[in-house]
Image 1 (cartoon, rainbow over the protein chains, first blue to last red):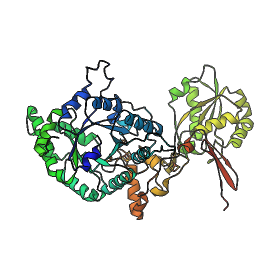
Image 2: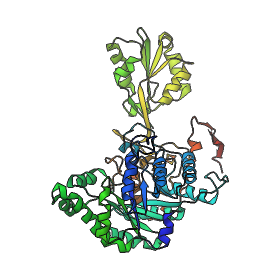
Image 3: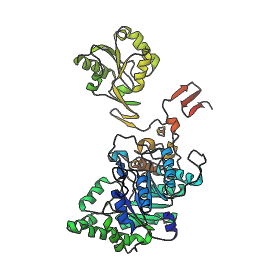
Image 4: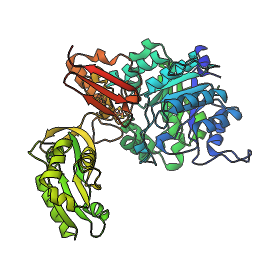
Length: 299
Length: 239
Ligand code: SF4
Ligand code: SF4
């Protein structure tokens, strides 16, 4: 099911995220890869689950294979597709393949640079940027490839995109967001935000676009992890008071605290956005608590 | 200019066979500015090779200062006439210059054996006597009209044409925090110029066929023809 259908119905759309395994899926169908197991844990609580595409430029199982596995298990995947590893031929071909295999939602991104990952000497492709990727995908929806040739059986998927409300200068980020909407983006998932004021300021500037936005949440696991993100994950900023808060409880109580912090944030911003995208980084078990704290009814 | 940096000496000598007589050729333009193949470095290279037991048949840097090694007619004259005997005696040429210079020596010597003495790193602006910076990636399809003359193909690590990724931190690029985010440079410049409107229009994907290899250019005083796999484009400079 397309997420756009849910947004149209006015649902507060909840998505989770899993990263494909570093390896192949077992031929024995009774053995689930860990990403599928995590997705199954999320299943009861979210509308769909994002499947990352060689996230952080670390080589893994293809996002499409993992997405299809989720779909087979009855979980709605949001297939992530990046420009880093594919030129325009491969991107279009993968989009057609995804649709042919039953994928309804695709998140179209630029992708992290190869330098951040585990294959630093690979050739970065970036034949297209994310705006051009979305524009090209829209062409496939209308029956044309990027060279203008007609295709048969157009694809019909919901196109998602990303935006970073923490960006400075924000207007430059919003300029790009506008281009993505003009190109055909139908919903947005944001980079992780921790500061209500930052998110409110962002929403004020973009509500005129009338495009659904899911606020991005990366679960805080420990003060160390928060500091690591501040240092190493560009475009994300965890405020000092939250770092102190997660550090204020003993290790065994961290999950509970973490759910509280995330839930409290979502509760504060849920009225100004159309959904939440939770990146649990393996702590899938606390997602129900986050939603509980936030006062969001399970789907 | 073509920025070059000398290869490590051990890597250079590794490829020279026992008994091979080497003629060293420098460049009086770009490599001179890079201190990788001017007169001083070329003479020094001859000494460094000799010190390592390699026989040097001779050396030269086609002059005067400012003269490019890649000017074939001149290099040919210098090698085949001015240095005729040493060149005849040489088994190979070690070139302290860019890859174009290496090929110029192949042409000038009618197919002589060559060793590249430098890595050619980029085409850049000589910002000062000690600093060269890359501002153009020589793509063949220039799109900087809309970016205030700053090239996102070169200044943005992901070569994004429609605006920044979300990763810049304090104005620095997520890929290399030592460097400014190219898109923030573009934004700040256009803001200063009062032309942020230039950023609004959609930039279509690049015509990579113009970035194909190899490419050539036929020139004359009145027109030029650029040849790539995208075809031949002739432009007049007269009307
Ligand atoms: S767009 Fe191409 S030609 Fe223009 S400055 Fe950039 S790399 Fe050079
Ligand atoms: S941070 Fe800026 S320069 Fe670096 S990849 Fe992103 S947009 Fe390009």
